[in-house]
Image 1 (cartoon, rainbow, N blue to C red):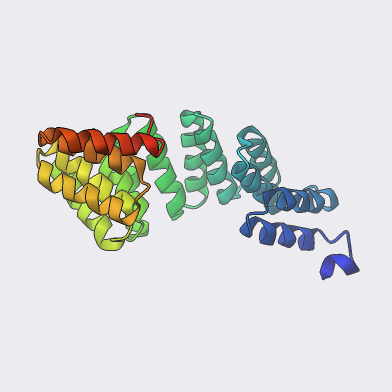
Image 2 (image 1 turned 135 degrees about the vertical axis):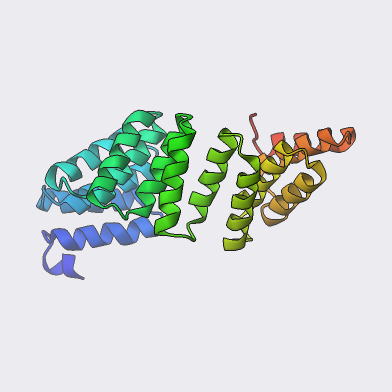
Length: 247
């Protein structure tokens, strides 16, 4: 192993951190990145990946500081800007997250993840027209980016454009028919269109894919309520609460 022959080899410590992070051994990964930074304090990738691990550990303020160090040493590090936006979003600082995503996009205009994350930040701010534009840009770059289709659904729902939202649901399902979120979102749109029987079928599909999907159980309860099926409504809502639904 390279570290055995040269314990001060920063790249080897960095690579060890990456492997440990992939294995979910975040505390050990953090130690490895700290060693890489000890031997090369200006190692932007080590700082950025340290931020990733800190984010996995729920240490969002520390993660933001790590991304800031990465950006200090490499101001054009688009991934670090994008990931900084992610932790700012976790901290509820959506305006700042939006700015970080814009910086990532300025550096790399074809950065689909940054466009998608910008759309999500705009959704959090209820800026639906701009969110829709960001989703469409993501999809232009990567037409099979299923999360961007789902964010587009939410933007269209916010704008009251339900028929278009339903078409976006069908596109998301076409891309990944085993992604439970796609079916849950289709159910939401069908509820808004007053098509309760179809909504129920969509929620049932989401639950078939992911039986522990609390939101889908709660939404199933709403569909059943709309259909006047009271006992089944109560059972679905009870199941949702058992699975941790807080709504």
